[in-house]
Image (cartoon, rainbow, N blue to C red):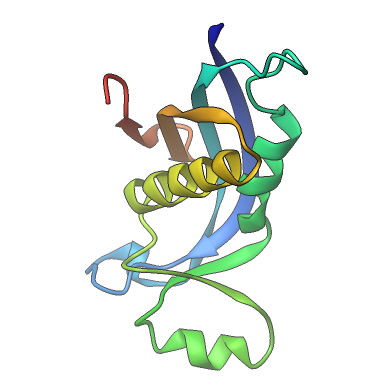
Length: 137
């Protein structure tokens, strides 16, 4: 049986944009919100497409973290004191949406699930979000 589920997860994290000129070039934090739609075949044994707790667990790796471009010189400094989540490029809401979608798809595959991200939104403020759609792929 084909199905689609929705999950919303929030996390607090700081970031800065290394290649940006403006306020976001400085380290600052957000209360991020992720909305994700997962689609695929429901597991016949469990009746579940993908456990909501697995979705939350994958996204919460960003919670209370500093997220930086792997090329950011601040990575080496901060890594002496705490873990830093590194991204292949500036950690914009667009890049985080793609990264989280990839992480969720890998988690589903690793768990043997026929589930994938259909659509994802990453909000960095109540009025600004990036959306990626994988529908029809």
